[in-house]
Length: 151
Image 1: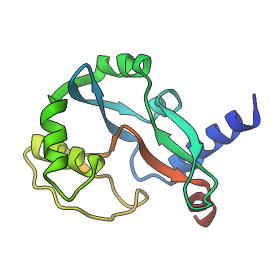
Image 2 (image 1 turned 90 degrees about the vertical axis):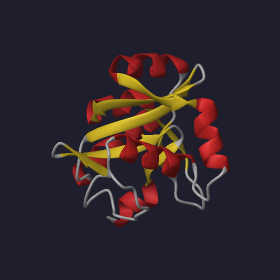
Image 3 (image 1 turned 120 degrees about the vertical axis):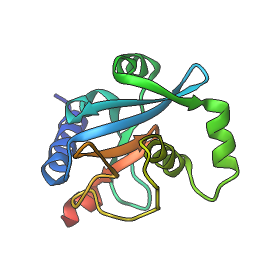
Image 4 (image 1 turned 60 degrees about the vertical axis):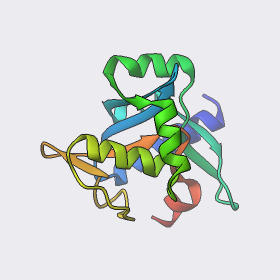
């Protein structure tokens, strides 16, 4: 195991030890559509990667699925909307891709979305049928070394 592989697994383990929920709704584009996949944290090592964090925060843990990883997620996914519609929503909003995805997922489940800053240690992004989920769209950052060191 390389040092970066060990660091990657360590960051996933530390994140999961602190996380309020281990259930996820992953968002990604594939062949012109935006999908949402429901899985638990066991998928993290397969769809996340270690990347350079910004502003001197060391390494970051990010959801950056490759096409083959997207194909694997499709077994647990459903179409949310077209990529064209999604991009229009982002372009006509003050919010970023992740926030628009979270908004669309929340509304898909018949709930009202409001932007919040609740830490991942205190709650999920949405609760459906009593289950809290973290919502992540492709290229999302989970955490970085600096945040984990602070906790």
